[in-house]
Image (cartoon, rainbow, N blue to C red; front, side, top):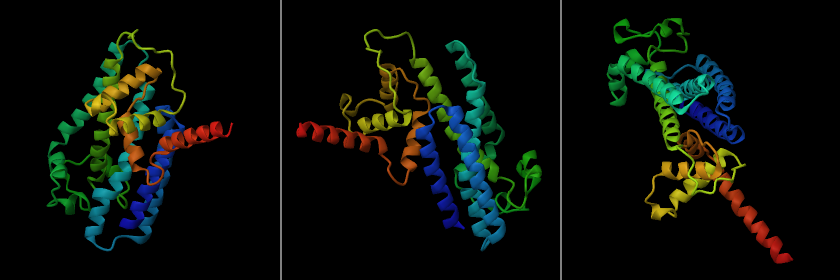
Amino acid sequence: MNNYCNEIIQELDEEISELSIDLDNPILLSEAVVELIITKIAKVKQHVLRIGFVNIEEEINFFKRLKPNILSKLIYYNTIYKIEAKKPHGCKKVIRKYLKNEISKIKRFFDNNLEFYKYYRTNSTYLDHKYFVRGKYDIKLGLDTYYFESDHSFSTSHDYKVAKIIANDLIQVYLEDQLTSLNKRSAPDHTIINNLNWTGSKTALIELIYALHAQSVLDNGNVDIKVIAISFEKIFNIDLGDFYHTYLELRNRKTNRTKFIDLLREGLIKKMDEQDEK
């Protein structure tokens, strides 16, 4: 079961990375990724119902780690879709209030599930047999109504909550990056030449930014990655959005992790060779 699920997760991460390159718009990207994940979850469910688990330990591992890994991506992209689709078109104050309200929703979930957060964050195991085994729910352990409406052949009382915790971490990073970008985007700095527009993909520029940061070629490496990203946004008139999450997707690629940088190298060498031949 582990090998099968890990292969599905790897395929999913690679396909999401490819979609991220082609689709810069967060709404279009989220829509495409949600559809992809639903297909993957259906495959995993079919496999689980057909093969089953060798023992209770394998079942716990699946519902505590493997399924939430996949389900958290669905929650994340579905939430980003709703956040972006409902984002108001107004002044910075209006947008800032909207983003902060979305962050407060994450805090409310945390406050309402504090005990389980503690259990999960401390890698506790003493209640795994109730939290992550099918049909072993305990209503005294803070169950959501969602559980009673779910398919109990493919759900436990708390696998969704684990996925929600993982997704919320990523959603909070996304929202905080949006706020940071909004706060930094103040009055135009006329000392910067801002008549250049980045016409490549956002993923390509983010790959370049992280490469420059890794080589410590800006201020001898004594500059935060957010500062570099915001500077590039100003110079090239582009909103990079949740650049940290995009970088995570680049890291998750199993092949061709530096696709844009490789293309830069190949393009420069080709140009040099062509000029040498003249």
